Image 1: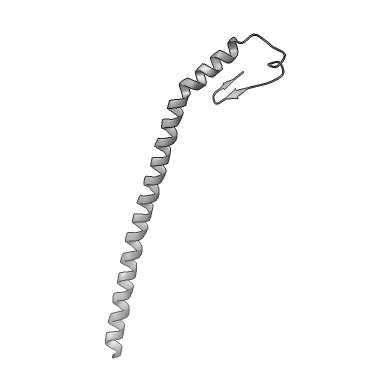
Image 2: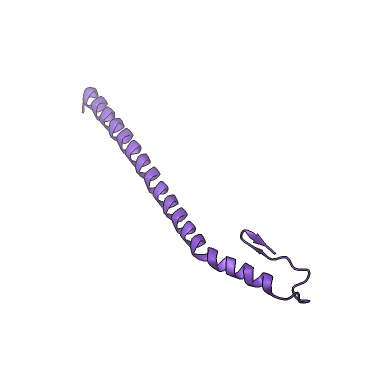
Length: 82
């Protein structure tokens, strides 16, 4: 192989490398953004599903009579504190 062909080959390899690097970086970012978005949606869904349960738990806990077992304990349930 002469030097001219070697230079063309190296140039072509550099061009391919840059193209692949750019496309894979974009693809990687899209995949991570999709995963993050998916996990965020799942977390929000779980919070919405369990929010009524937490409210019932908080409400029922506040209606119990003051017992020796209950005195001196602080219960924190997400956004509610008893």
